[in-house]
Image 1: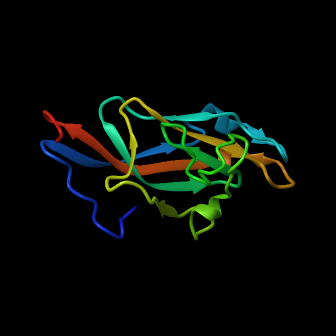
Image 2 (image 1 turned 30 degrees about the horizontal axis):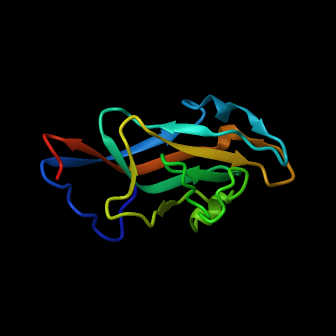
Length: 155
């Protein structure tokens, strides 16, 4: 379970934040049933968000041997922002955390987290930077954060 080191601000006005996690693996992403040969990479894989509330991403859990590139709903990469090439900026899961990729990594972002609009999507791309084939069924990504529900108007 993800517990932030520092407290996040309360939801503004008449809004309510509820903790929420999106999990993506072979059960809900068909691309995770295939494999990646050495040097091969996937196309853009959308991680779709629910339409009921905005989502503020606060941490990511990555499992699997493939290198990953993550982008926010505005197509900004989480890795080196100076290199916006889609075919670059792949990071190994262990570079996102210190527990071989299985840990949860807090994001340096706005006060509330990385914003994802209701019905929006984060995007990942996977690459095999190694010498042997990777079975994508071993990959899983979990987005931890909060859904912000609006009673009337958030101010």
